[in-house]
Amino acid sequence: MTFWLTIDYHRSMKRISHSDSKRDAILAAAIRLFARQGVDGASIRDIGRAAGVTEAALYKHFASKEAVAKAIFIHYSDLYARLIDEFAARPGPLRLRWDALVAELVHQFEADRFGILIIMQRHHTFAELSPDHRRPLEALADMIRHGVEAGELPPQTPPLTAILVFGAISRLALVIDQGMIDIAVTQEVKIELQQRLRSLVGLP
Image 1 (cartoon, rainbow, N blue to C red):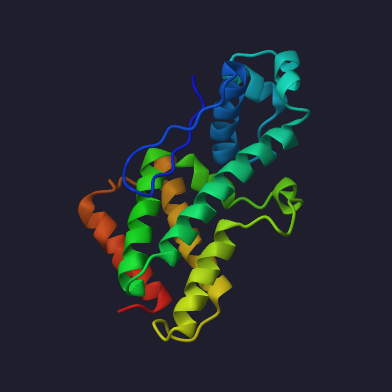
Image 2: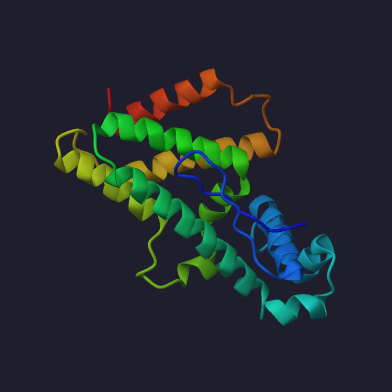
């Protein structure tokens, strides 16, 4: 299995892969396990078994499970932060940019639902990242803050709103991934999600 993640600002899939197939397999297996079981819930042995490699082979690529988790978190965190910043920097009314951002977040979730589940985790490994590392929640809070300053959004606490927005999307990803409810992400559902999240930030 080849490890790949997608980020797409212009509606075309971009493949991002590592040259080493074993490292790819380790990362792909760890992503699935971490997203569904949490970092603490998956062991090095679990990752190796799911990747089809020995523990010795795994340690040739990563010093520890925490190193695997940090590599995955940084990758997804950077991708989503850049995505949000790209839409925030676009010209035009905030409402149009917001709807386009929500549509793209859903697109990313459909392409790879594990990413958003991982970046919403609060494992101590992720908390140890440099304060200078830009996280998706920071990017989204900044986008909301600029909307408030520009008079396009009502007064609010941007970090809180950002948490609520990401919480809603990540919860949807979790519910669908675990089959908790029978819901298909149809075009109608996507439009309704845009409307609900627009209301959450105070857009008409």
